[in-house]
Amino acid sequence: MAKSTVERMLAGFKSFKAMYYEQRPERVTDLMNMGQKPEVLLIACSDSRVDPAILTNAEPGEMFVIRNVANLVPPYEPDENYHGTSSAIEFAVRDLKVRDIVILGHSACGGIQALVEHGEAGKVPERDFIGEWVSMAKCCLEHGPDVDEVSRRSIGNSLQNLMTFPYIQERVAAGDLNLHGWWFGMKEGILWRYDAATDEFVQGDE
Ligand SMILES: [Zn+2]
Image 1 (tube, helix red, strand yellow):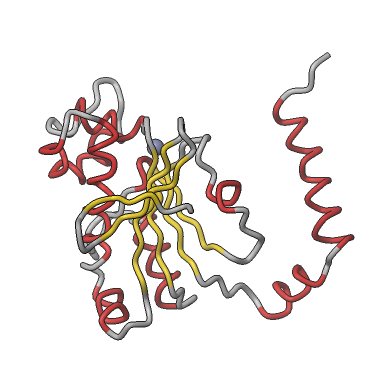
Image 2 (cartoon, rainbow, N blue to C red):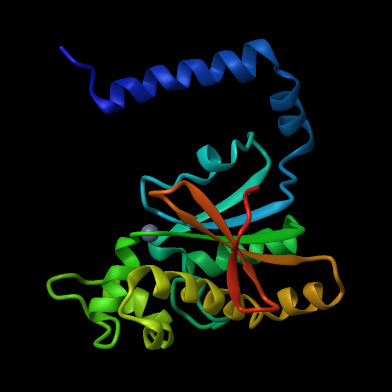
């Protein structure tokens, strides 16, 4: 009988263990002795097709990763709500002191599709959370209704929201934190990079 995905994942863990614990254990030993010191905070979508570690060939300890619906960054709003994304940003910037923050968006994003269809209302019918979540980027709807264009614009919006965090603003101004926007065209396999000078995305994987 064919193996289930979960069974294949358990086998996958065996390969991971062979690679990092048997063939070259130095990296894991260092990470255990010294703790994590990732240089990059990467904020990606939860979409199963855009796993940041697979896309970038990253190794354990290199990237601190936040994944949420549509790779959105909320504005800095310290209040009594439950702020998962902002907590992870705070930890990465203030405690881990990452040097780069990358927001990674992608084509055909279901979260952005929900934004395009329901963002103005802030409510997706028969769903409790997603409508309000994606509506944080509803200012990008002026670039719609093309989902991919709204997705790219929402990266610019999230970069602006990052700058509302006071410690990010300070470290960017001091030149020891860099912000990046990337957008993955899944069909063509192209990685585009946001160019703040022109407010456009340029092909950036060559
Ligand atoms: Zn997505």
